[in-house]
Length: 542
Image (cartoon, rainbow, N blue to C red; front, side, top):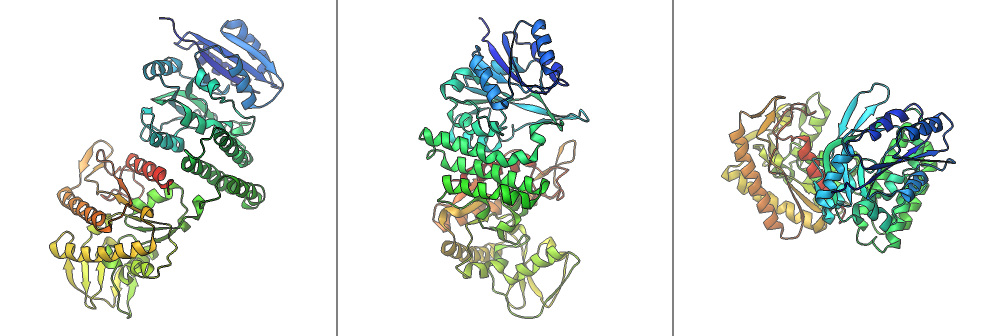
């Protein structure tokens, strides 16, 4: 059977230093049926001379030279002249693994996917050190459903390179690139939602050069023009009557790109410059396309639960100031109990732990929910902090006997009884306080904006060589059973349709390099990423 031709499109602009390495990797591909469309975009160095030399070396190279128009227009010219069944875009300062095209075509034939995406290496131009960039823990091998597409939109690589495209798919959907900065961002949503399916190759086949002097990516001021890319794809979806279908995903994609660009430019260029040149354009964009909902950075969150859930919330794209309420090391029993006015003192050199112990004793959540004007948009719950024993105080109040409690010295209170987590007395008291919590949530938070994360304590950790069970893993198993009972009770009693997210059931452990320490309440990074992806996509619906 004759191999299908692949058109490799290579725009070239002032890359005399890098072009040979790029073209060596292309002409020596193990997949031989390729055409190489090399386009000089008005270079002022020796790029033109090198291109002409390469034309003499390999008959598969078709060469064009034109005035400088930019990357988008140059790629489009290559697409207009492509004769292959498949198209691959390669930047002229980068290079390919020698079997790159062979790997991608094999997957394209097997899956009949319009797009095949792969991993890549980042190579520092100064040090030549490289790092593989992979999204395999978040992205399925075959992306077909709207949910999988939404996840891929948020976590897939937006760059047009690293992907093999069906030429019929690109031409049939008029997926030409605008002649603007960040043209990759401008067409990525169309690639994601219009392809019949996207296949994912969990191999690095592309070498992407970073820290190169003169690269567009190193120009921070260009990030301001991400708004132009967002306008381009929004106009495309509006024109083709698709914006309503993909509204939530497009809004989140726009927000995360603009939010990232705003913060990066503020850090690298200065807040004043960004506020003058970026802020008004961003506001104009939102007023045009997304007038009926809050911005990503306007949501206010409450959290009753662990640091794991806090980290997930921040990775969705929330700033620290948007988390209005969170008291870790604190149980529902303590948080939903009235405290008796009186003098207490908390002695510790750790101001954070002093604060959480005080809030645990005071029952901050009870007062927040009693206000009935908490102005929280979302409330996130997990029950990992319920693993702690409870101290019953002489004044009738309760306090959580967490490590934060034991690490501080508290004067003015007296624990008269320890209620062991998971015991009969503990569960009875917990259910009573949980009912009060549910009543308060219903008065303050819309049903769909209550989020339950079904987390579990890790039973094992990675010591760098193998997975080892925690010494108290039997106790941890019992606590996980208790946590599951609490989740089921909460779901049954709340009686409304809330958002629920299950933690992955396999391969959950604590990595040995976790920045907060090796403890059962912390998970491996892949687990966090999967939970972030689930929560982030579904969060957009509301």
